[in-house]
Length: 515
RNA sequence: GGCGCCGUGGCCGAGUGGUUAGGCAGAGGCCUGCAAAGCCUCGUACACCGGUUCGAAUCCGGUCGGCGCCUCCA
Image (cartoon, rainbow, N blue to C red; front, side):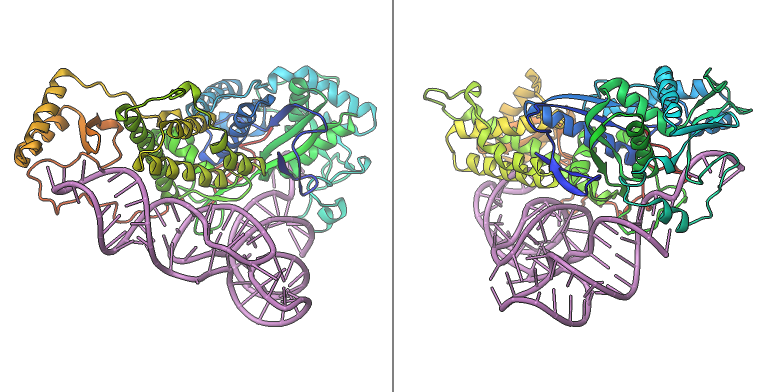
């Protein structure tokens, strides 16, 4: 498997020579509010990658941090009239709750800044000892001039950055170079948390937290460091400088997820309404829909947050469910015979070939979805052509495995609990239909719908499913309805939120997702 | 201004030096009492201008447009 490495700007083998295990660190959120769907994209894609690797038999150690000490938390806590630690605790719960709802599972380790304070301080001390950092006015700064490779990850030079900065760089009261960044900040008035350090009471800078947490969870050297592309500079550059400067090999590869943005190319802005919280999105759609939406584009490319895209994801999910239901029905009704005609003999190897090929090339989930669609198509065709049931079972297995890997098992058709009353109605309706008494048949169908069933007349006989499992709109019709009266689709279904939604806070400052 | 990414058919969104992406939406059809599901058929896209090449949407240069990032503090 190969992935695009930001550090070398090339696709690189994911595994080090001879390695069979992987360790992955991904920058998680700063906890001061609910995360939004842009943040969630990054988390979902990396978790999906981990799940896929495990499905492929790879042992993965996956860590993703929770930044619970940061400027943004102090600021937000003040606004809310609560203490920063209270807010961090609350927002951590929100984060865990919201991302768990995605259904993809959780990282193995979720270190916090507050839980890594000793490691952070130790690392800063080492940098000071090595001459890569200096204390000034109660703060400790990293000395970028002393780290020769500063800027290499993000592909920029100190000179370029100083000369070509968008804004005038603030030389800083105590800084030796305008790009020197804070490792430790002395406690300031209004900040309600601080920790003892060799430089007095204070708290860690944003970047050093991740260096320490990554090392604490995965060791001094690990395989992949991930995060949103907006964190490339300065956050990841600084992490690398700190850890490498401190003598650690640090991450071997850097993977960056693209931003979620508006489809009309509108500028990122602070305008209201351009961000949808993950919890809100999950309140209005099933998790599988959001996950399929994320998977519909390559993780590295920008992806447009649009109602159209969400609709497409919904349709795909429905197709998956319907295909499984259809094939299940086929297996239940077809006369199976012969040895090995059993799920336990199903072999999905062949169906996975195309999917593997796609995913092993830089985790191309869009391509994988195309391959999955091919499996769905083949399975439907098999059913149409009354193919060997083993072929059907093989394909079903592949699809079910796919659902499991991507945490969308909810798409598996639900069991239908057909009550005796319902069964009687079905039988009565079949009788009526046999007599071509369609008025009676439709009347009974309405009765079944009142009981919460949607009726489908299939080649294999009458089938009912629970209304709540039926695709939107199906079964809404009532006998006697004018057939011309169809519920209007949303007349102005425009792409909803404009503007980029990314690892960026509502106020446009790049600090929601960090590490 | 610097660094980077990108401009694909109505929409989303892959990919490749010469071969159908896929899906959604739309039209027609098969099946079907109706509905649902499934299947079949239909669009010959790749910002613009040059160049390289037998051949480029795919490589190079330029133009235009979009996007991301450009510390901390304030």
